[in-house]
Image 1 (tube, rainbow, N blue to C red):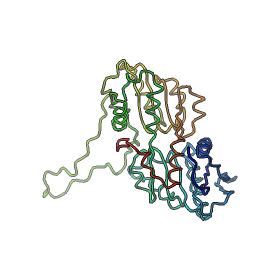
Image 2 (image 1 turned 135 degrees about the vertical axis):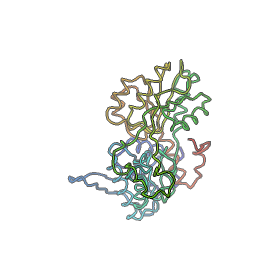
Image 3 (image 1 turned 60 degrees about the vertical axis):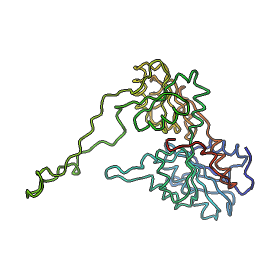
Image 4 (image 1 turned 180 degrees about the horizontal axis):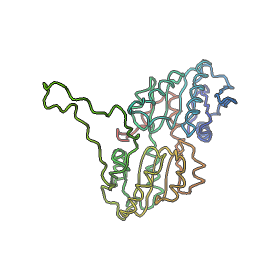
Length: 355
């Protein structure tokens, strides 16, 4: 890869993913800048930038891991330290954006991803490079440019090169919400699609509180029959079912994030019952929290393929089914193009709304 044209580029990284920082640094041919990020005895985050950043383009590489709140504070303090040291521009390279699942209003909660976006912009970040946001609309929360890169070309390449007889595969949507992504993969590979319907979706428990108490009936009879405000009929999920034929086929489930694997395991058991003889799970971000490696090891899933946007070396040691696809070349190319003021359109070639 052609190195950046000028020497005024500085790569610095937090503690979230040192391996990815080194991979990007090696591909760009740029030495990682001196930056010490550590925690004091009272758990406060301290950042000390060793090299001069005045008038330079800074690229801060920090992803979201299980230690998510420390990751965020490290990123914000690093960005603010560069801002107050007169850096020319500060680009946040955040392969997995934390809190991206909290991008919708739920009950008396809040849209946390918007709060995080505002904090990042205030801290001094002038540009964001991220990958496969949970919802593309999150880009609108930022007051600075956001490049939402796609990992699907790497995963499609993995299917074609590493899954024997992939032509006998069917792309499976774990729930109707992921059908668009599954359709995108299926159309590119010219394969069929199946959708699992009836699975218990992730949602907060419906607690009984005053919001669901029925309104009092009007005392006067001037309205039509005194029924008050009509009650929204509660959903009743149908029994779990597979829409589409998977018998004697390789089932490939695709998603943007795999964290709590219980829903994937439940889906794989249903697919196995319906005759799928091999089951793969492909996702961009592999958080694989709690006892995910053990659950995957004991499940009918044959392979879980994730990219290295999030470190998961420990999980790979616990489960031999987890495979990794390296996407550092895509992040390196994005950094190079932004720094050399080249067009980013090549990295979004053939990307559609469904990707």
